[in-house]
Length: 222
Image 1 (tube, rainbow, N blue to C red):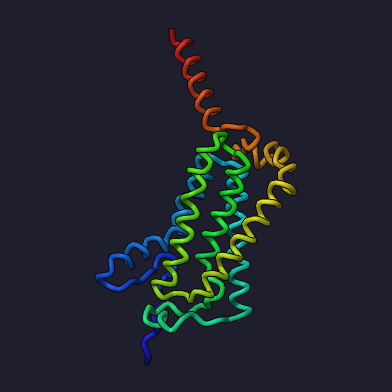
Image 2 (spheres, rainbow, N blue to C red):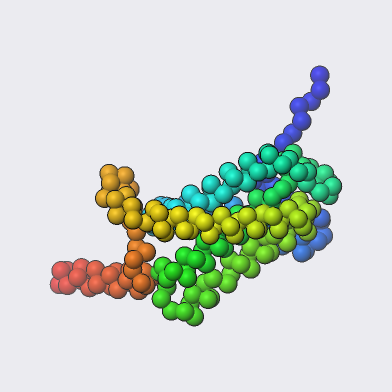
């Protein structure tokens, strides 16, 4: 009786050549979408529960579904180097990692440019820059490590930029007027769902309110 073939969990299964420090670094870069999804958005839901952040995450999920549908339709193979990595059981066009990161960078940039949470222009540029660097590094890592061709990562990045821009428009032009209704719904009240995108500087607003609440508490204890 033949032994059943083994399959790896590809979510965190990234291979690189032993002794290659750049490959090791890029393998970790390739895991950034996982860190953003599990570390970023999951923590955001538990500790922030902002509607903007939630719809941001929903957009990334929709983007990934679209990516899988396109892959299944075109069924373009991954490069030959992928066979050595034992990771060629899925199609390669477009690259889902590139699409994810460029969707993230685009939506994050538009969100920051709109002024959500930050009012100072210098701070905005400082916040916008890192996501694009990470997106470019992720795109490069997928080619360097042998998981995708150049055409596949460029297709993923272009689709990510397009979908990120479209979803930002949908959320902030079509869905935004419904935010107050969501906040006041039983779901919003039960889970403390909120929207602070109308506040020019959320960090300063929360900082001032926290100090004021502490001052009032200290005054009561006297």
